[in-house]
Length: 164
Image (cartoon, rainbow, N blue to C red; front, side, top):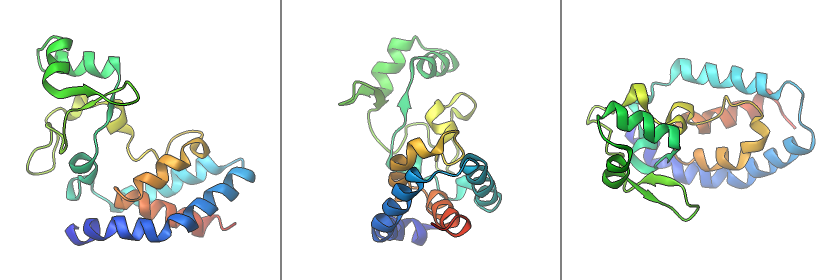
């Protein structure tokens, strides 16, 4: 897995123009059942992918924390929301709460998450390839192909399943 993760940014960069063109065409001619097809490809990929083997998302990127996330996690940690914010978060250029640093402070050495049951919505939904109205997040998906081997494989699979 370490070798796959090490090669992923280069592979994603090599495929970026091809994938961008594919998604641009897909936006112009979006099949009605695209979300269903994405769900199918997503489910197939995650039958053979175990995120605990990788956790590259937790090691290299930080999620956005919503007010609901902050409330839920701080309660779980028995902290006041402001304590949680001060200890773990910062405000980014988009005025969103994000982690102060990566890797994630809640990532354990075995790639498990200390706050898994109450983790942020962005973590629960990553890599977002099974999201409704997928066509609206193709730019995010392109970014995620450089972080997540599963996202990379899902994009390759949808191009084969739905050639344009």
